Image (cartoon, rainbow, N blue to C red; front, top):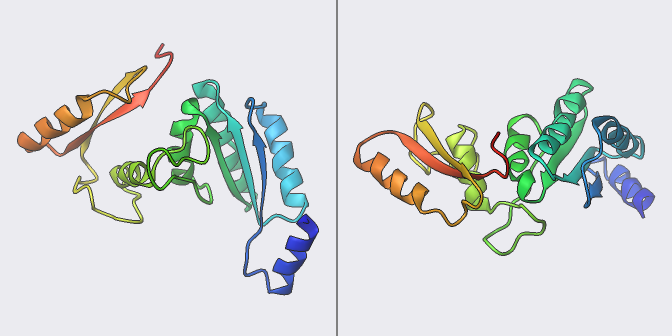
Length: 186
């Protein structure tokens, strides 16, 4: 099947880029293992390699995200991030450091993988980071805005972002208050 897809793309002038992916739904292997998987994807004819693992710790995000500069240094395209609640941050950071793309669900409850953000959440974060591409400026927060965060577990239900965003707006302070779930803050 893979060879057929690659042959069809080639027959049409490679206008369609073929993504060959690897998913590890149980863990994040060491960087060396992920690097070998990346090379196998590329050697099999991929235009873009996609490597997604399950993050069990914040450090797993760093392991997977380190594939992006590695691929960029050898002028290859990669999609790399982690799934799961521990991997949410990698989905945001990946496109900021050069991942070919990231994935988001259309709305809450429609995620195709655990830890996937909604399109609106992704747009909000990318706009705050000055990298919004879909509704640029929608948040009307200047690039030099102050960013405040609440770290905890759980934080999804926290009303703090709503209250603090309202207070920042009332006080005419350019800023945004964001929740980040962290299991171990030390």
